[in-house]
Image (cartoon, rainbow, N blue to C red; front, side, top):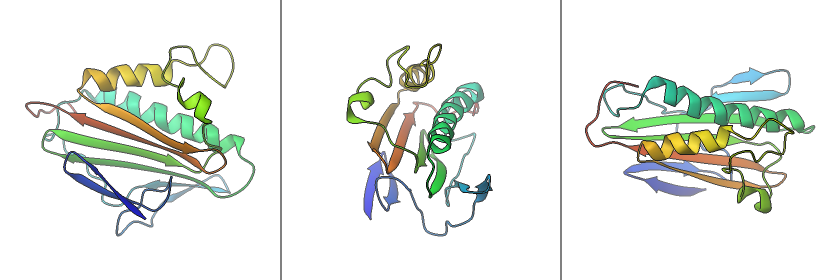
Length: 166
């Protein structure tokens, strides 16, 4: 287990993937062999950070869809997806962890490029788009991945004056 600190938030992570907070353990089983969990301790307050709801949906939706795609390509268990949303005044962290196939080191360097995809033609805009949205909102996105183990994305967002657009 290791601890990560982001702008005053402390997250405990058990491995390269699988962010766990005390009290977590619930979840929704996806298909017969998968599990989707909202991270224990997740909290979203409209008053903490000014972020248009459409941007929030785009960020979480794209990261979650990519994680589901990776899980669907994997034949063996476990197939787990965990999403966490944590806010405090003027800051937000979003975590998306999966036990999919992982991303090669070579591809990790390219995943935010417009048009790059391992999924075929006409793809490769999602991560580029969300990186632009995140940077527009004074944020960062990081990825940690190991082939055959899974992938963890961490998004941090900050603002100057709080707001009520989440």
